[in-house]
Each structure stands twice: as structure tokens, then as C-alpha cells.
Image (cartoon, rainbow, N blue to C red; front, side):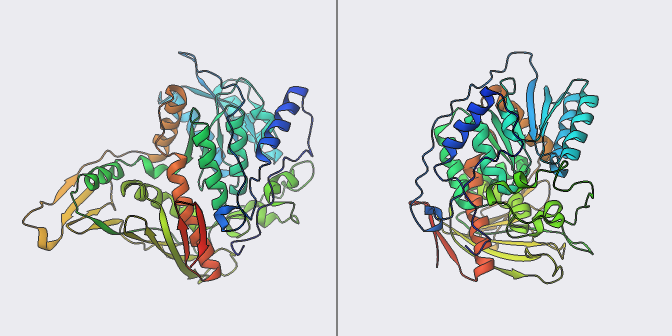
Length: 451
């Protein structure tokens, strides 16, 4: 597979095992449930052998939320993103946005995990537990839900483990590293429809996208034929050059074997550990890390159709030391006769205006508000209109939406369903970038193939 080495089956590692019998039973069960092939390279999504994974109902006992009780949350992954979530949750609780406590954290790197443990204990005034293995945290029976902010090659396995343990979850974007695992999670959530899984694409919370969907459904712009969006930024030295902590090395401070996990053990490289988004084995770079923010709400606004043809081009134009591309241009065709043009860059901050073009009118989504503007030949029939939308912090709103879903069991705003459609774009665009071919996707058979 030209998008990087194929994921190995996601077996659980046992390097740091000090589990009780109950926890050991959970681990054995979890591994067995995942052993149908989670992460296999030759599944139907790749156009190869049939994917024989079968999703089953979770057997974990879901902890009920009692009235007046704070949600008890675990956080898996306490790097930059995970720590940001921890700090924000504590702040939102203090602001009265929801009632929750982070009672446990997990990270393969002791310095990171223990720093988060100490700060959260001090900030919340409670004792917070630390684990190096996420299965240890999931085996607890006093946790309602987990927020997962691990590197993306672990996402599918950790969501599977959480759901099978009866824990609702919030998974950072992109939902998975590869398409086959996104399709697996779609199956898993369909079978476990009593569980909540929210994907961390916070732009889904902007009211303008819901308003755009309403207008399109009402026929306000005629047939939507073409849309465009982008996520572009710039830096002098390169993207994702996070600071390297010399304290974090394999051994007492880092379980490197577990960090590699589903992709198999690789030679230690501090650059890979600290800056994994720059490398094609571990990340899809701009496409999965940045563009999902824009494409997820756009797909929602346009009615949630499946992509059926994806072609991408670009290259390493400035940041030549980064393995993933620093400039990407993507064309996506959807099953409802619509084309979306997407641009991503880490070497120029000049992007495209976010815009949905219809036969009769266009929707401009570049700002906080939504503007409907008729095509010239329809200007006598359609009035220009500006729909004012609330100014919100989308990430704060998405976390609050997740907390409310966990508490009330109401559907969340950024579900696996839409993330799966976005992963078709992510995966096929990544393949197209590396192999130079257009890729097609068949929503009937859930298979992808080069065109």
C-alpha cells in the first residue's frame, strides 16, 4: 500500500503488565473481539480480500450517570492535544458549562502522564490516577467516558477497546489512520448504537453549517454543483516541529514498543515520536490533521453524501525535510453529482474562500455568518441574505456537546457516520498523492479501487 506500510493486526502488548485477574480477563476479551482483523491491510476497503471482521455488542457494563453526579472522565494521551483538552475541561467545569471530573490519565511516556496527573490533581482538588497502558484505565468500573488524544495509528484500537468496555468516547481527528478502520468503526457503532462516540472535528459546531444545510434542503440555491474549502498556514522552519524532550527515551520513561503498537515495533527515532505528523507511516499530514476540520462540516452541509472519486496532487515545495506533503490539492466527486475542491498548505497561508456554489445561488461561509447571494440570472427571483450566527468557541462547544450526549444519551454533533465519509476523502486523497492515480469508492460495496 503506497500510503505507507500496511498496519499490522492490532494486538495488545504486554510489556508493562501488572494486571489483576479482572483486568486480565478484560484484556483477553478485548483482544479476542478485535482479532477479526482490525488493521488488516487486505480488507475489502482496499479492494483486496474480503474483510471478515464482525462487530459484536459490547459486554462491558456501562456506568449510569446519576442525577447531580459529575461525569467521571479518563484521558488517554497527554501530549500537546491531550493536555490542552485537560486544561480546557477543567476551565469549562469552573465556568459552569458542564459538571465533570478527570479522574484518570494514561500515556506511554511517564514524564507526560505524571505531569498531567499532578496538575489535574492540584487543579481539581481530587486524586487523579495515572496508567501507562490504556487497557488498565478502561478496566475500571467507575469511569463514564474517555477522551482519546493518542497518535492516530492507535485511534481505531482504542475506540474499539473503549466501546467494548462500555465506555463512551471522544476520539481526536482524524478518526482513524486508514479507511478500513474507519469502516470498521462505522460497523462497530451501528451494532453498539447505545454508545456515544464523538469525533474531534470541532467546526461541526459552527451554526453556519447547519444553516447552510437547511437552505440547501429548502432548495434556496437550486442544485448544489460545486464547492471549495481550504486549510492553509505557513511557517518559516516547517510544520509540526514540536519541541523534543530529551528526557523521553525508551526505557523507564517511555514504552516505545507500546507507542508503536498497531504498526509493529520500529527503530527508535525521537523525531518520529515527537513529530510523527511529518511522517507518512504514522500520519496523513495536512489531509488528515488539517483538512478534516473543513471537509467534515462541508459534507454535513451538503447532505452527507459519500465521496465516489478522489484525485489529489501536490508535493514537497518548501519543507523538503518533511516526508508528508506541504502542499496538497484535492478534487472530490460525490454520489449526488457534486464536486468539491480542497486546498491544504503548510507553506502558504493564503487559502480559498469557503463557498458552496448552486445553480441559482451561492453560499459564502468564510466568516462567522452565512451569506446567500444569487447568481446574476436569478437576481430578480432571489434576494441576497445574510444569516447572523452566534460567535462561539467551536472546540469548547464540541466538548460540551459530547458531555451532554454522555449524560442524556442524545446523539452527538460530530458522529462516526460523517467522520467515515471524510475518511474516504482522507485515505483516497493520500493514496492519490503517493501513487499518482485517481481512486474510486463504491458506497454499495464499501470498497475502494484505483481508477
